Length: 241
Image 1 (cartoon, one colour):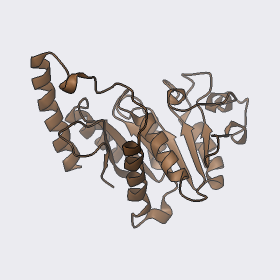
Image 2 (cartoon, rainbow, N blue to C red):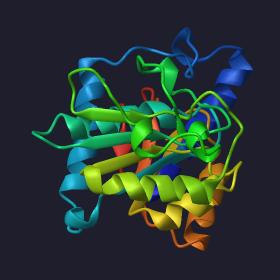
Image 3 (cartoon, rainbow, N blue to C red):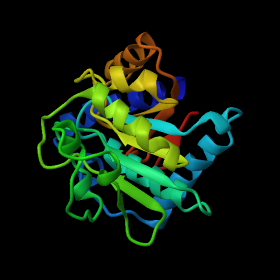
Image 4 (tube, helix red, strand yellow):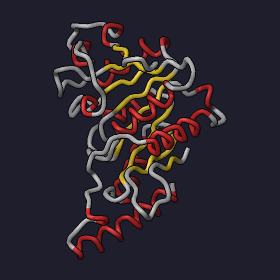
């Protein structure tokens, strides 16, 4: 992760200069939303390739995507990776919105009404009834549901375990690792974790704390996605897997 830390440190230095000048670089906010473009889709295809061509690829089926804190783009990365995986032949992909406290998948994808994880946690739905197919792509979704704040990580693990045999990959959009204990429960139960950090916002200390928290529970860290880079990083997304 040394390259990620170097980029974050450089971002911190640039932020300090920017604050002194009273504006963001290039005159825009790094956290602003922008629709996916061809370059971004290429980046997610490269991220998919990084996963598929690891020596232990055949063992990779369930992946948690998390960030150090809110607003770093973990949901966007989870969606991009899920779509990239689903675009490969007949690959069956399930995207699970497991960020029960602040779900944001509806900001990125057009979602149909129906039960979500919170309905399962309330005992009102089976895991199979939660799955919704997303349009014509080979991607299915499980949303958080309409009862944000209802959290039972062990029950979520159980639901995912029941659904996993029906899919080649399960991508889990999880809450920030530094703020909640959810990933400490989910991380050791899946094949690996991808950590998202924001190039011009995430302090190096936060990235280090997140890695230590994942290491403590024995979670396997596939790599880091350095999100929303500017001129000091050569590509939009860099994954170290």
